[in-house]
Length: 282
Image (cartoon, rainbow, N blue to C red; front, side):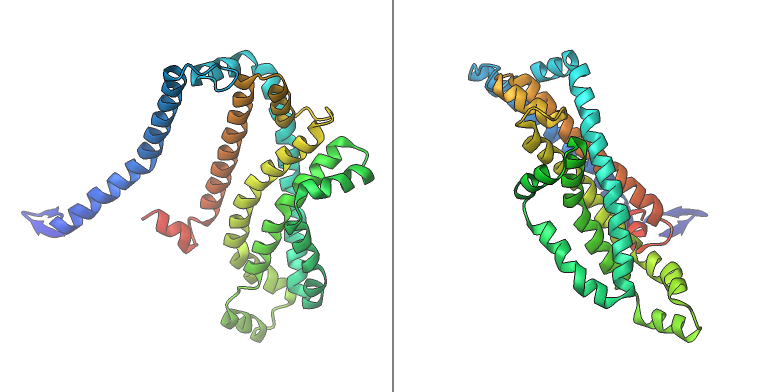
């Protein structure tokens, strides 16, 4: 940057970097939107050019019209799915954070119980659900338990990693100054683990929705669920492809919104002090 006639002027290299940064900011939103519009247009044209019946592949306009016509049914089912999703996410946060704090306070507890968490994570939920179906009578509790199992492990593993990733020099400094275990946890370990926890939260947010939908699919086969997954099963049996696509659209949109909201929360919490958020603001 140079000063000419009392005014600041950008040199060529800095002006190029400013233009590139501006283009990247615009492109981050414009390019995905343009690709999405192009994909929808191709979808519509393929249906028209090949004269595909709507019970096999409906046109985008038909899907939107179905979403409007069946809004009462679909959105009421969406609320059921969202209730399971957010309840399971809240339980995953409470259980995952609480257990990870317990792990950091005792290595013996971590060595004893962490393998069980891994077993829950690697076992497919469709294989666990028949056992849950036998031992649990309440339908909502069944779905909630399935979704919680899927969302629990990312919170637990990420938070445990963050709590154990404290700088050794800072930990020794706290000990030299006579800090108690509670003070070390509150003022050192928990702030250091916050980025890891928020990263796990973003993963668990999507997984809780996936777990809720998968659980509804398994339970919906018996007609006991009223969530969006049961609407998809019902539409598939009736060859009602427009409603099926409309329900899929709602699930996808919900997953995107959950990720965006959790990403915004993470950015607002970290933006003033953590390097990952500070870099995004440059």
